[in-house]
Each structure stands twice: as C-alpha cells, then as structure tokens.
Image 1 (cartoon, rainbow, N blue to C red):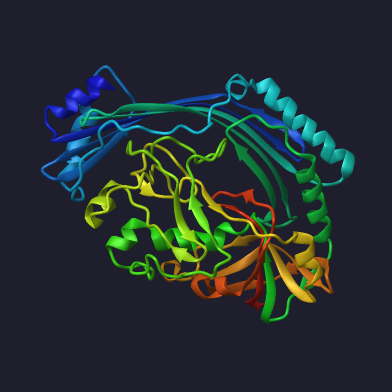
Image 2: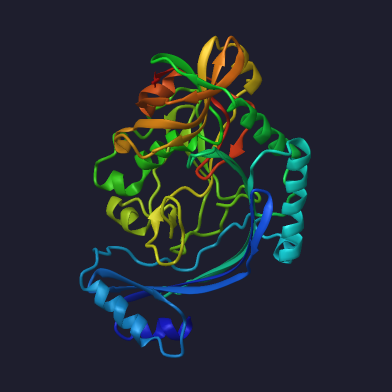
Length: 435
C-alpha cells in the first residue's frame, strides 16, 4: 500500500489507498438439503487521486508493478468531479465491539453443523415445509492509507443466519435474517415465527381499497425509513433537492419518533471506527422526538456544504458493497427508539387492517419528497383482532412526512433489518389498494 501511495504521489496532488481483505465461508441449504460450502478469500484495492482539483478512481489488485492502476486513476481524474476537500489526517476513533475471536476461527464444518441443526428443528415442526437456509461467516480487514498521513485499519467479524420460504410459483417469500458481529445460535423463536407466518399464507384474502390500519413489522420498516436517508443525505442537501434541507431544529415527524446514527452499538454490522474515507464515525441524533437534528455528509458533500464530513461515507450501493464503488452517503447503524406496546396488542385492537412483513418496489414514488407506492410482497389481513390470512394483490401508498404523523404506537421490541434497527410501526390509517 505504501509503494502504491508513493507511486501515485509522484503525479497526483493527493492520493488515498483503500485495501479490503475478506475471508468468507457461505453455506447454502436448498429445501433443507446442503448444496454447497465454499471458502473465499478476497483482496482488493481502490486508489483515489486528486489531480488539478479533480477526483479520479481505479480499482484492482496490489501488484509489484501498480503503474497501470495509477495511470487509470489519473486518467479518470481528467474527467472527474471537482474535489474541494483534503483527505483526512490521523484522528482518534472509538472502537465498538465488532471482532469476535470465536467467530473468526469458525470453520465450514461448524457453520454447516449450525445450519443442519436449524434444518432439523424446522423438519421436526413441519415436515412438509420448504425452506432455504443461508449461513455465512465473514472475517474482514479494512485499511485506509492517504497522503495526509492517515494509516488506519480495523478487523470485523460478521455472522449471518437466514431462513427463506418461497411461495410456490412466486419470486416472493418470507425471510428471517439475523446479522451480528459475534457468534450466535439461530433462535428457536425465529424458526417458530417463520412456520407460523407460513401457516397464515394457506388462506388468501382480498383486501378492500380505502384507509385502513397498517402495521409494518421490523422486517419491512426499512422501505419507508429509507426516505429519511434520502432526506438527510448531504448530496441532496447541497443540491437543494431535499424537502427538509431548511428544517434543522424543526419538527418533521411526531414526538414518538427518534432516530440515532450509532456506530458504537456493540456487535452491530454497521459499527466501525471510521468510514471508507478514513473519517472517524460518531454517534449522532438524526431525529429527536420528531425534531430534525442532523444531516450526514461524505468528504465531497461536506466540503460543498461547509459542514465537513460526518463519517458516513461507505463503498456500497443499496444492496451491494465493495471497494469498486465510490464512497456514498449512508448511515452506520440507524436505530429507532422503541415504544411501549406489544405487537400482539396492536393486532388485538384492529377490526380490519393489514400487517406488512415485506414489500416489492420500495423505490417507487418520489423518494426525495418522501413518497412511497409499494406492493405488499408478504402481508396478512387482520379481522376482528386476529390474523385471518395472506393479503393478496395489495398496495400501499403515502408520504412519510405526512403518514408518520398517523403512527398510533411503536412496539416495545426492536429488530435489525438491512437499513434500520426498528420496532413494529402501527399506523392508525394508511392508503391501501386491494384488487
């Protein structure tokens, strides 16, 4: 990395080298039968340079001769975006608990045994159910080196346990995924939850069109909370396209809602000491009792806004990550404060409503303005306080800056999904379209 940085600095004004080293062991079970166990090693590097005030990037592998990588980055800088920022110098960081020694040493045989144990439990509860399993152990090292003197790295372990039941003749299903930085045994409660939800799908129910009570389970809340990320994204603040760009210190949501960006949360997947640009991450309120408190920035948007980076730049897209992506603006761990109501009590008081477990087309609608219009991929109908069956041919639509004020309660539990740790969200009404 040092050689590459020195080589780049012979022609560049600034340079940054990011090295990702990752060892992963994924185990796949299809219909409760083990299909493949693979061990993979990945070592990739990304070089970013600033030349004549413009940013260029190139990715590849570390070689004895990295001149091609440097030339590609410099060539990209000729047409790159303006770079009115300096790469960060060394800073103090706080490290959360993200490395588990036991997990780091976990073997493919042990992961397979974990998956097999879950498969047997599923069979013992329902011998006819079709379920795919995915278990994976990841050992990751991220290193950032730049021309400002930064040389920082961290080690992180990740363990994923995922159960997926696909509906016959459909691309949709019921997904129960857990991701932590430490080793865990897949909980029986999640197995029971999956089997119970599959039972609900045996009866299909048509939903009426109109304003109905709606509950978003934690597995589905990301689809509407994603609009908050779009709203506080520094790029949208700088470009003046966010509807909340002028609302710092003002109420945008009801008092019941509080969101925190928390990279210090123990064992959480997004807990890292610094982001992918080498800027220290910090715990910060985003929305506090409905009041907008913070925007989030990477280096370019932070420089353009005059606010500086908030340590929220990550080499990822909506569903993928890797050094080949430019650092985009995302939360570390977005955590929503829970409420006090039991999920069962929410169900019990609904005469006719919908429970949403998963959605299709979360990107539909003008996300910048907080709008959504989504199909219910997996949902159930509640009648007279009980779940009656699967909601068929159902859509929901609305705007988070309006509909969040119709939240009646939040549940007393929070669970992780790909975008937020959240409780169940109980809306007194939402626009629902049936067949």
